[in-house]
Image (cartoon, rainbow, N blue to C red; front, top):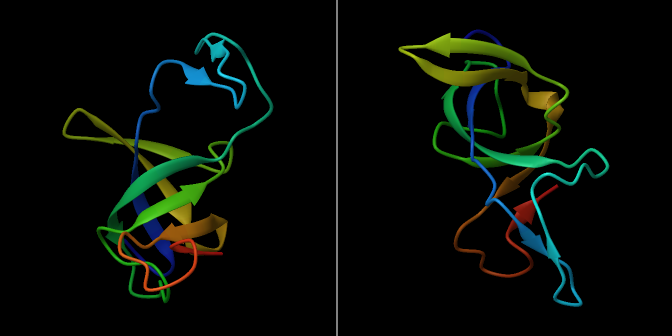
Length: 97
């Protein structure tokens, strides 16, 4: 990857969700645009805050799609990332926004 570009593999969502009241929301229901999680598989030399292996939150509409070795990846700029997850937070939520 060049400059601030990231190669991201989208983490698939589970089929159905539950509301806070316990109602099942099937995956066929179209909701407002939701941010999705993905795993960074490659990062350019200009990426300052994201590295390979990070789990990131991004808008699925801000993407370019590419297929490598029969697997689907997304190409994003670092500025299109909304959050980076930290699996072992010392304090706080574990997200860098």
